[in-house]
Image (cartoon, rainbow, N blue to C red; front, top):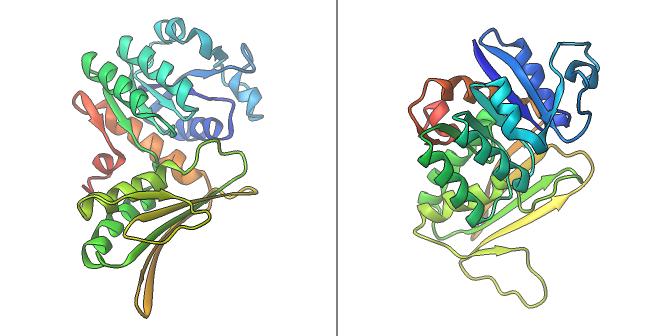
Length: 264
């Protein structure tokens, strides 16, 4: 049985991940971590009934990990909190599944250093859905054949999402840019903005949109659109749980969801 800790446990994504953990025959929830509802049973917070796991304080994560001794921690929080959580896990030999986005280059460098120096295992991905990981592969194939087309990326998310553009859109731009040997990225346009050979990235925020990503390849007389739409956060939660099971048996190192799905 793989012992699981979940940060951001009282949020929508955290609660959904916990639901999936509880349904899995391979996993056992040993720790629900958050900055709210400290001491309350996480089952009562989720309104599903007591499960015997109290919410523990994210501000005391070092001690929480030492007491609960999870095998894997799943983190879907915000960048600043996730860096602290990753550091604590690395130093306590707890493996990681990280779906948080919006990291700076320095934050990514710090996390990678901690993970590597402490020889733990981590899956870090801006998106854990199976469909999105296939989507990225399709973009690379399209870019190879449509290298002279204009390329635009449009993403849409709910009005509570903090970072923009989304991590999935940034990864899509990187996949295309790497395929084409490097492209300038332009985030939105305003005023005089003549188009050259850049990749345009545009963020939409509104309502309860779970996550839409469209990549437009526009040529003379035609266009191709490759799109992924998430209908529910369940796509991300199921993928995160699958990654937690996979990383438990992996060798030390930093992996992507594509490694878990064996589609690299």
